[in-house]
Every structure is written in C-alpha cells, then in structure tokens.
Image (cartoon, rainbow, N blue to C red; front, side, top):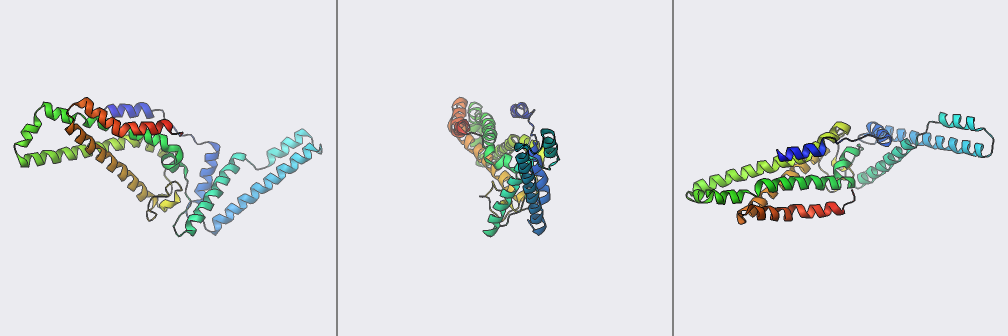
Length: 284
C-alpha cells in the first residue's frame, strides 16, 4: 500500500509532451520504419532537395531585401510562401544522422532498421539515467522496508525454534519464504517501472517491436540476435532477477541481524545509498 501511494504521488501528473520537432521526427519515422530501401532513400533525397531549395530561396530573398530590391511587405509575404520550418529541418537532420548510423551498423554485419527512437530513449538513453535510478531506489526502499523485519519477527515469535524441530518442515518453510520473497520482489519491480512505461506508451507507443534490437541506437550492448520485443523482455527479466536477488540478500541480512533497525540500515547502505550518490551527481 505504501509503495502504491508513493507511485501515485510521483506519477499522478506525469505527462510527455510531443513538441514540434518530435512531431516531425515521428512523422518521418512512420514513413521510414523498417529497412531503408531504394524508395525510402529516394524520399530522403527529395526532402533534402526540398530543404535545399527552400534555403536557397530564403537566402535570395534576404539578399534582395538587404539590397532594397524588394520592400518589407513583399519580403514577409514571400517568406511565408516558402515551405520551410526550422524545426522540421532539425528533425530531418536527426533522421539523416540516424540513417547514417544504421548504415554503419549494417556494414559491420549486424542487422539494423529504422525505428522511432524517442520512446526507447526515455528508458535507455542518457537522459533517462536519473529516472531509472529513482525507480530502482524506490524498488530497493520498499524491499528493505518489507523484508528487513523478517529476522526480528522470527526471533521475537520464536518461529526459528519451532521450525528447527523438523528438518522436513524447516525445508518446506524456507522454500515457502523464498517463493514469497521472490513474488514480493517481482511485484515491487513491476510497480516501480510500470507507471512510467504506461505513460510513455500512451504518448508514443512502442513502434517496431519486430525489428532487430540493434535498431535502437541506445542498446548497443544487448545481443543483436534479438528483436526489440524479445530484447525488452530480456531487460525486464533482468530487472526482475535483480529485484529477487536483492530481496534474498536483504533477507539474509535480516537473519544475521535480528534488530530490524540495523537490518534496514544495512540494506539501505548497500542498495540505496550508492544509487542516491549516483543520482545526485547525474545531470539527467
């Protein structure tokens, strides 16, 4: 309940706004998604020609106005007639740079295709580091609060003595505890990241899930034999494993330190403090 309240307070007003440059980039991405075939490259060339022509027209008008060959009203009218938006031009340059990166990856023998990078950059790009650290800190904080008290509860209730009577019963109880800790870890991991995932999906969606994972320029270290959907599952499973393993370690700490405060402090020092330091010194 505490974690749900924390997530609600944190993400109740979270929104992702699509600005003009992102809109144009998304428009180009819809056209170019997939393999960069001859038709798509011809489209890129035609857009480059359009921007170059518009730029030449603007330079010509500027020169004519500076030389007093045309008046101000005609100058403004002619500028408005030119099909040129600087934000669209910026988005197009981003698209061209991405195409060049994709070509370089393909030339190295690794398959890559064009896909909208924006929603994935919000999780794996440099600007997502602080948000990811924050979600992991909340995950570990909740795990520490939940699990650090296990040792003290078992000691105070003398459960350990009762369990020790039967070896079979002890094994069964320990197995059940491990299962419960694993479920708590997986649930906490899901709740830690789900709100941001939902917010990004509602704004951008997750395009190109069937394309090679190396199509995402921010995931250069993920095995390139995967597609994006399986790559995301792999990353999600890795987060789940981290959560479960952390839960087991915190439980071990609580068993060795029956005092709940000490166990909580040690778990926080091991798992939360390093992330807090990284988050403090992280720009994004």
